[in-house]
Image (tube, rainbow, N blue to C red):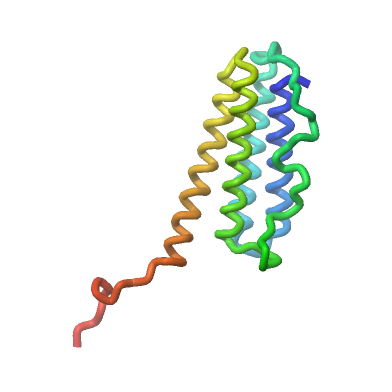
Length: 157
């Protein structure tokens, strides 16, 4: 299997993982984001598949097929809760996106034949990372910001 096929398989793994998480969270606030992430991974795989002819000369992958950042991940977990809250989930999803970025950078560094493909994938994963990071920031603010009575809106009597 060449590096392009490895990347396509990794994107399919990501899609399947996020779809499984969406099914497990179909009755809560995480469902929409999980479906959106799955659709993005599906789109990445389709774009890569459309580039097969252009990148057919990529070298064979020396990465074992079973090496995937989604391997052995059945469900996002927290130490104390059976179902993670939004902030827990987004923190773990951020780690997965960083693992994707790191893996694609490693492949790109080791196989400099054509960096356009993996540069594209890195940019896509960095967009996911940025989106999830921003969501984490917003949710952390909700949990930590306390309205200051000095600046709050108060009725005048």
